Image (cartoon, rainbow, N blue to C red; front, side):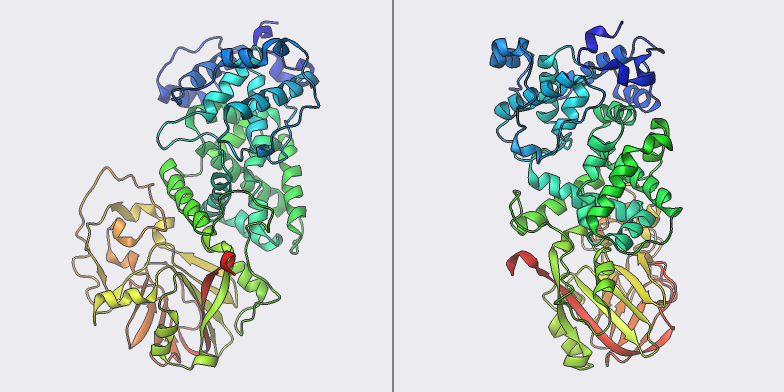
Length: 565
């Protein structure tokens, strides 16, 4: 067999069609752009030997630390043991978090070789504290290695990558945990229907999303995973997010044919997703999976990096940097202690699933309620100032329930003096719960073409000056349309109209959420008694309830650090 040099560890009887080599026998390109196109198209997908040679070329091109262990280091460490049959009883390091080495059509002895390689890596990379994807990567690369030493070198180079802004594998618990939160943010934004399904059926959304890397690196069949690896070695970590979101979309389509599902234990949902992905080959081809993954527009490395850094910072502030034997990071709502006169624990849990993942570590804290504090806008501000973010809930006398997630401290309103000025960030959103559930995000998230450049410092959005100079804009062509992140303030974007960045405003006469166009998403008077709702261009929302409504009850909730309790 021509692939013998690169198939030492492969059980060819399990490879199916992949055991039959065909197609091109060499790749004549050195430019990354060409590799990217060829990887996505599967240029070397039908030739095992060519794939192995391409992998070797790609991995050798990874910028690495000055001192990165290579094949000779492995041979020196292992000595004569490298030539002996490995023991299958070698335990894996603790940092793989109990994840086994996937079989991936390997011989039984090859799985034991992976154990030996991973343990050698543990000795050479003492700074690795949490790397659950390492067994899968090692198993995959064994397929395309001449011997254990070459596989060791390839894995070492992936771990030692030091290209600025690029990463290939999470190696700490902080990085891994924040990646799970980032996946939740991305799923919420780019995979809304599937995210709603998980929210509706799983008791703990974050527990389900904690498996996102394993969906790709572990659960996918080898024929699918190796096509993902083709692109991953060229384009990096973002590919894993794309593929995981595509898998979530396919899972939602799979579940759509079933009956309406009641909330279940999260473990059952996790196992259901795992079973679906393991059997995905019967309905989704590798090419179809990649096509779906790269049809998701606007996911880019910069956005992922911004979200990742923000979530890491949130975890650090909570003191969560290493894995500890304590409760999992999850939607922290305790239904036994939660008490609201407007929403049930289940409804608050649903709202919690919409908020940025870093705040899911917090407990809801009641800051203000008209039933206890009276209908006074002054008392509203005095109880809410100093808290960021906040959640506004309203029940009308007609029984409708609506509200808003407000990203910024209400004290910011004072920066405008007596002038009613808008403030806040693109993380704000409005919603309604009754008579039906719907959320309306910042319109720029859904239509990024509305933002074109960075707004100069000091430029403000004033409610009083709405419509003035609205068509003037400063061009900054270096800012790509897709590089948007909703947690950035409106001043970071140059919008073709101020109307699309009017998040929240307030003075002693009124409270406003959402502006632009002919109305506000929410307008509440100084007595917190009457309000109006209408379409606004910031959220592009319909009226959240009856357009002119009377308030029966109003609550404001803060986000209390659960780790400080």
